[in-house]
Length: 493
Length: 104
Image (cartoon, each protein chain N blue to C red):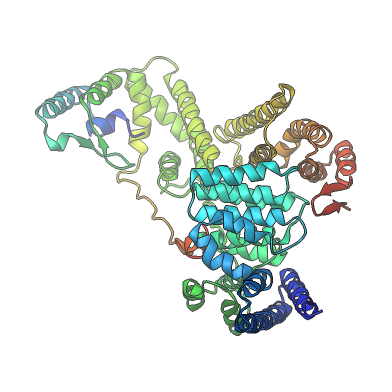
């Protein structure tokens, strides 16, 4: 009976924390304050009870009370400020079970990976990976655990991609998503990707921890869409690591929308700027400056003008005569230069994932063909390798299957965004054929429901983009299947 | 572009064949004696190391009228000064913040 008020308070505190996860408005502060107030009451009650028990020489009962009633209340603080910084991954795993009664292994696994990432060791990684691999089917916790292990090895880009991929998985552990969102928010702040962070905030992609909520406010302030100054201070006060984040608070840079890209200079010949020197200069500039789509398009357009220019060809013909070059040397020189330039520009476009330029001259047309065919071939062989592996019976762990899918999808998206809707229409049939086959295999033979569902959902979205009616129907049916997860069955509408 | 024979020899594109041969011999001699001035040559993409093999290859290429035509096309129309590298934009981020906030 004495435990009843305590349990009620504990329950209300959990409800307050859950509500905080959902809200990004003033209610966030209200729920946070309520959660904090209840936690204080709980700690005071436990302290009082412990004092009474110690006074009555009941040491063992006092210790038991602290373990049962005190530790759960301070678990988040203990984890963040003591256990994780020390790299005590086994303790983090044990304590991680306290936060929830529903699949607590998921939270525990991610806390263990977080602690290990602070002080990584090969034996620790093997310990965490073994526990991760024992959990089947794949869900968000396994992906986040893998991402944190990858980050511990120093591969932030792969970690970023994996953490973001959890958005496609229907299994949802709020604490796991919170930590994924916090890592992404800290990473975005480190890179200065304020627009990316503000986009995540406005779409509420991840539930916000107090730290994430503060960084989202900073991102908003930096792009000119932030909260009021007082609210930003309130967020800072609620967030941990205030000393480290104080500088962010002190230097708000309010710039509005991202600066518009300067338009590519028109590649029109003028007496002051003859076409060939202009093209050579634009070409050289590509290797000395940050190459973006407008600069790249300007260089291609400059070459198209220069190589089609009558003046250039006349100069070549005259000089070929003067040098006593063989017959047809001028035409051959134009062909060779065209090939060299196209090769170099194709390499630049591939390295920077740039699309085919709009100009369709002697350089622009073959370059567009080369980029489209090269990217399609690369995608086709990547999807074929995926399918071949399945037919050859080369079964990988679920998280490796997920990583392969995420990498393939990223390659597809990069090629499609560079090549436009035309390339997307050509590439989709390969992705659809292989992806559907893999999704069916993962669902029927390997019981990897969330993974299979994510593949079908992505294919369904692509099918709608390219307007493939049959694929829309098939993927729609697959996506509507109820997905069994450890947090319950999920039915997509 | 950086291995253009005219840049390797440090001569303008309208140089006569005799002058090319003379300059090549002079550069080979200087490289043999280890002259510091001969060790580098200027290109629109910045200075590059010069070797005796590169000098021999350059002069051999310029003896062929077709190869000289192509080399001239680039060298004649390249900017006279090195294209300046664009400085990296100042980052709006906070280096090392992830670690300060408890993450790797």
